[in-house]
Amino acid sequence: MLDVGCGNGAKLAELVRDGAAASVGVDISGNFTAAWPPGLELIRGDLSDLDSVHGLAGRTFDRILFLQSFGYAKDPVRTLQAARAMLADDGFILLTRTQPIRYAVERAEQNGTSLGEEYFSAGTFTYRSGWNDQIALTKRTYTISDLINVFSTAGLWIETAIEPQLSEDARRRYPHKQAWMNKYLGILIFKLRPHPSQ
Image (cartoon, rainbow, N blue to C red; front, side):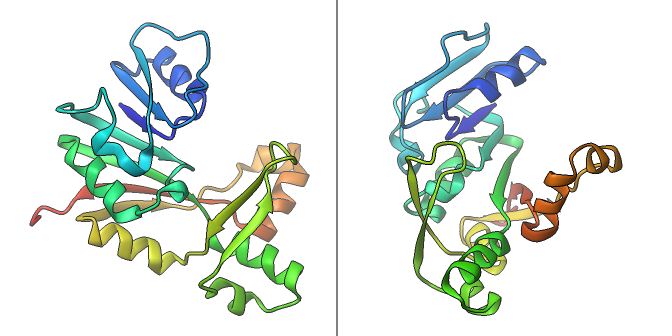
């Protein structure tokens, strides 16, 4: 397994402890967790330049993960093409993205505009990170069709797309999370495979 944009590697370490074998995490920060389980390798590298990351050349993976990291790719098509080249014959890419309507709702509220105006806006936007209010993140806007077109251009097809929801138990236990999901919709999860004709 390859986790692209793995952050400190903690999530991948958890997957390895749960049975994932021969797993590699790549992140530009190089600020990795100190407790690595056996079978985990963490490499400093830029997801925008995957084909040049030292330690990945010539390797293949059954699973390649982009867990909320894909939005940082400078050239999304190039990044996916590089990942696609590292897939084993029956491998797939698991990619998660924030539902783009979330950002459109937030921007519409901030700017006093409509949901449609913000959803189809072509500009970048900046917001304070939810995990550290001292950090501002700047992102490009995107629509669901933008994502589908990037996947297709990179030679990938969507085997499955999921929009996860909270379980009934979680809704009762965490009403504030359900209220957030009702407004912002959560994330999209895509299982991508190489198009057979490419």
